[in-house]
Amino acid sequence: MIRILLADDENLIRVALAQMLELEDDLEVVAQAATGPAAVAAAKDNTPDVAVLDLQMPGLDGITVTEQILRVLPDCACVIVTSHGRPGYLKRALSSGVKGFLPKTTPAATLAETVRKVHAGGRHVDPELAAEAISAGDSPLTPREADVLEFAADGSPIEEIARRASLSTGTVRNYLSNAITKLDATNRHDACATARRMGWI
Amino acid sequence: MIRILLADDENLIRVALAQMLELEDDLEVVAQAATGPAAVAAAKDNTPDVAVLDLQMPGLDGITVTEQILRVLPDCACVIVTSHGRPGYLKRALSSGVKGFLPKTTPAATLAETVRKVHAGGRHVDPELAAEAISAGDSPLTPREADVLEFAADGSPIEEIARRASLSTGTVRNYLSNAITKLDATNRHDACATARRMGWI
DNA sequence: GGTCGGGCATGACAGATGTCATCTCCGGCG
DNA sequence: CGCCGGAGATGACATCTGTCATGCCCGACC
Image (tube, rainbow over all chains, first blue to last red; front, side, top):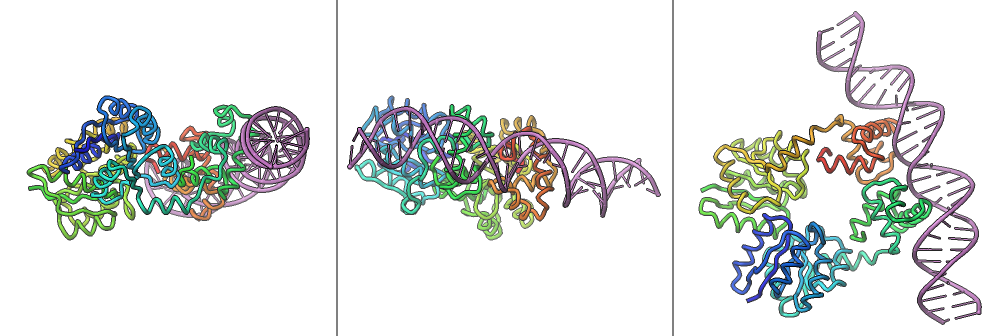
């Protein structure tokens, strides 16, 4: 019997997925969580074999949750499930120790199969996403450029970005200008959109 | 037996929800669809009693699908389910004839209850969302301002917005300026963010 | 030890953007 | 009929942004 932790902030979805997994003879959902921190706590309390984590959750995202779970339970296999299949997310997820990565558009049977596969020590990433990730390449942004772009993402004026990043306004403009050039965008918001689409911020 | 059409572009979620609904003795999922147009077609072919529609789907959104279904099957009760509980969406949904509106964060049992309620001729909207919608008020934007803001949303420069909206650049700037003032934003992108958050574009 | 690249900054400049006053045209409405 | 509000437009002006050249400091690497 494979013991599963299921974390997703959408109750309806989480419960439906739990019931679906429970229909499998060899799977058992031993804990559920609706937030990132709750998922980490539930993992500590229940020592599941496999953790199925939504990527976007209040508090901590699925990747950070994975890192924290692995620190306590190195043998727990983490599978990320997400609505937004951005290439960059997949890369970050894999480098943080995730064993499986599925978009929510994947066929239903795949989830149970993936759980079994990662529990057996294997890995599974959605093939389409993997292809995208490979063709998309790495982020061309330096860490600082990514930071600044992230602050710019909500439409703040330069001055506020500078304040939040503890930089001078001139420097912020340089970084944004670099980012715009690298991402082949027409302005900073376009650049934000591109970076987001690729999962680079 | 209540006959249900279930439409959601995320396979994993749709199948899980279908299984959950099938567990109820009085509910039967007679058709599933992964896109807006497919949902409309499936409704025509299967004449369901209740349509459970995701708000964001490829092709047509849940609200448009509702309108099209009601044109053919005026007695079909439509329920919208969504990840993004924006107040404006609720308003638009209700005015297009939707009978139920639930965020995906709602307790799992609520979905089945809502299906029964709307099938019996009732309505059900998530109370929290209803409260938000009331307190949020109506969009202060004129239809044209909303149009322009929508074109501005992806970060295009003014010139391109003007082209897409068939307006002069000056006019676009006026509308944008008005929208920025009305939404109490610092620039057009901030305004877009706000309008989106409220579901006004 | 020298060189190179990244992080950080400044200043100058052009072009994009936001604001404002003002104007026309048109459809509703008293 | 006359008035008004909304759509659409223009022009002037002040800022904000994006670009570029240039410089400093520091850690990495040969």
